[in-house]
Image (cartoon, rainbow, N blue to C red; front, side):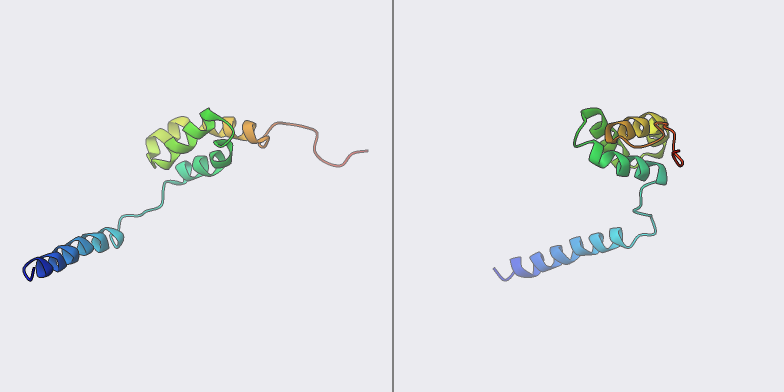
Length: 95
């Protein structure tokens, strides 16, 4: 048993060092703003609509190229599901 304890401690320290290196790396953890916008707007819409949920999940992958490809369609879909966005209307003061 004495041999396993130091080996286990060494293994734990080794694994912890990898976790710390990964968390402190200079690589950003933030998704591209385009992906973040889709994920944010489609989060609630995804609970209501399957296609909106698909947009939300794709945006969470953080793939900028994919987000740029789906951005217009997904934002329009999710805004429509939520009843927000540029749906027109008169706006301004009424007479």
